[in-house]
Length: 517
Image (cartoon, rainbow, N blue to C red; front, side):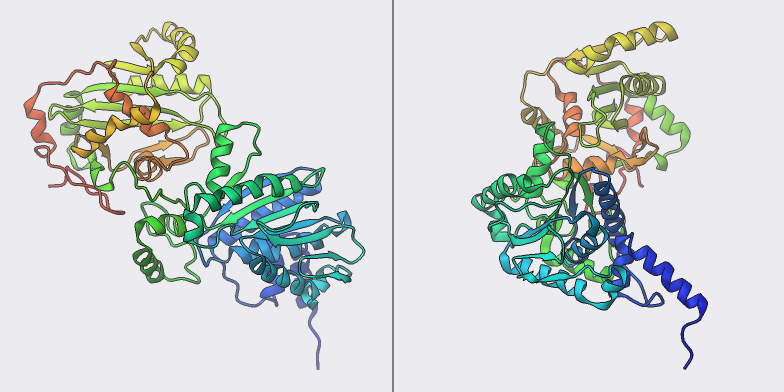
């Protein structure tokens, strides 16, 4: 019987070479061998594997990585981070003799995971990639085992188990919360946080480590939520990079894992769970069960594209236009953004959001965005929260003098708590007095295009107060600031231009326009 051809052997060797360096190729080698086998994975699998591969490369160069991964239930996250990753890490970094700590909500759960890691290592495909990397038969209990000839230990325990005294170059926290009952218990959430802060984060090995918290989020105040809050409040807290993979993208039907789950499956799960549970378990963006302040059907939109160009220009001219600015100086990914809203006051006595900015901007970039909005919209006034205005005013004044373009800036002093300020918007939205454009596209300084209408709705309006950032809604609340003096225009002809002020409310993922006749 003839053996494999030279081309087949070459292809096989290329496949093996990739599997030694890349986590996704490693999974394919161990689980979907041979190279010609069908190979389909969700888009989240590729992204997570690529980032974990990079984390291991960084570890080998002495750089630590902190990752916060959110994936819907039943989407194979444990296969990646708790089964494939430890086996791949122990093999690809065998020369460094690393230690691992694997934990989750219970001893039985993590024992099943580590049993699979040992099984992967013992099988022929793994031994072909990493010959000699075997579990030490003298130290191979489920709770604590090592690679033969290595000083590094693999420690396995529930998140409230005994890992004190153990260390890890790779630390994986997988599904820290067992069920809804545990997630809703503040006592349980406090216990999990205390174990994470005191018994897990203190187990990192020097000089570098990889810490991964991977879960389907259940609650706004669970471990993931507290890590996000801690990063916002304390600049010295480790910077966890977020990898979030909602089941469907907001505003469009794009299933995360169509190779395994059909659109009908996602529909049935959304219907079964209901909006609140689906927000966490499918969209990876949990909503407080105490309820959001603003209801989705208060959110109204208009569609200027439905108007003739001449009518639209006349409508804009009929308005009194104002710019509201809330400055953030930091440009870090997880910091607050600089937000600017252009709001028009129309003759029908409604507020219309006309334009906006939400971005991590430097001083010069903020100044350029302001001048761009002023040139485009010719506002009556620019209202600027006093802290940001004082920091930027001299730079703006210099540019005004240089360009011969002067416009009025009024500083707003905030003496009311942020949550109380945002409450100013509740009657505005409830009474149907404020409208967003159906789409409001903004290209950030990195060249990425955002729909600010969708970002505002999905990330702040519909979930407030259970939000990570509230920059956009906080800045918009300044339309009701007691020191803001707004003038309403008087032109009854313009009312007919937008359809007599008829309002169509926002429902689910469909946005309908008040301008549609």
